[in-house]
Image 1 (cartoon, helix red, strand yellow):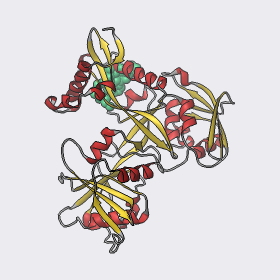
Image 2 (image 1 turned 90 degrees about the vertical axis):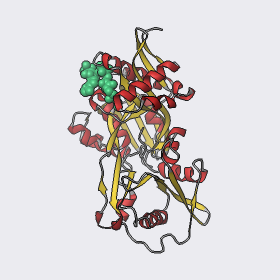
Image 3 (image 1 turned 45 degrees about the horizontal axis):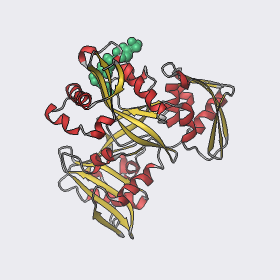
Image 4 (image 1 turned 135 degrees about the vertical axis):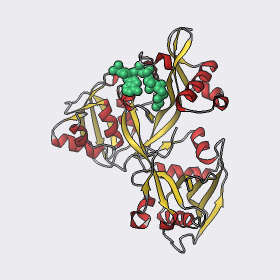
Length: 387
Ligand SMILES: CC(C)(COP(=O)(O)OP(=O)(O)OC[C@H]1O[C@@H](n2cnc3c(N)ncnc32)[C@H](O)[C@@H]1OP(=O)(O)O)[C@@H](O)C(=O)NCCC(=O)NCCS
């Protein structure tokens, strides 16, 4: 077996699971349960002298930006074997995967970082949030009548109307994931634990759903929810209110602008630990700019991108947006200079170009920075999935 970056064999994937169990905590006896053909296919390793020196697993998902879906490899369980740390194999692994993603036509990669510095050196930048919210149940609004007109029905994990409801909401947001089977399973039917799943149908049309954890150690845990109408959000709040007799708290995941926050009186919701930022890496700048959606405006951005670790991304690009439809060409005047990390945070809308300029991740005159901010403006980026 040659040294270097490569797709995993089954023994490699098993080694990755065990290294991850050692690094992150976990039971080695059950760690190997996850290794099926699909898992092996999406595991990558760096080999040194016939041994796995570093390994990662990724999910092949989509990420929504202004209504369009971009393919995205979501990295999970990246680990360098302890004896090999500090020798560059982690970096070799990440860059190997990023180049493979680019070659496969995947313009984005996303992850949660234990060590942001390591990933920033590979071109990732914090670019969105997952917010863990909580509220004391007695602070939930009463909302009599909010469930009128709704049929609240249990649903199966593969339920199409519930999944369509999630997608309809996620598409209106930035950064939300188009889930793969594994992420759906975790939200609706995990290997361990139970979920109580309810759909909120209004005259036969699904307008919301809830997936509630059976484990109540943390209060009533809403593992997943989506709603496409205001009345469905109010119905969901009323349903949660009805749980208050035996649950002191309700906890859930959402964005910084989660709609339930403003529907709960007196700003009573609080932020819990587990709130964190995710990091994005643009693996193909031209494709990413071409594939995302934009506000229905006309604009011209002359970008000059710096990318030390993926030089194919570097250089000038002219992004023209006409009534929201983009074209991207090489060249232009390079009026806004951006490190690829700065571009990641601008692309999602997590940071404005003016904010990036303050920390040296963007440079340009005031008018060009303002135009860049406007083009990428939208709902604040978030996702509710952890991996
Ligand atoms: C984080 C981890 C993957 C880094 O792997 P590694 O093979 O030791 O990293 P490398 O030697 O390739 O380091 C690449 C660069 O990142 C830096 N770096 C590595 N680990 C770092 C850390 N914990 N904090 C800050 N910088 C770090 C290195 O100094 C190096 O910088 P340089 O290029 O300027 O010299 C490894 O420490 C690990 O497996 N930790 C436990 C599991 C974990 O946290 N995984 C990440 C999950 S999100």
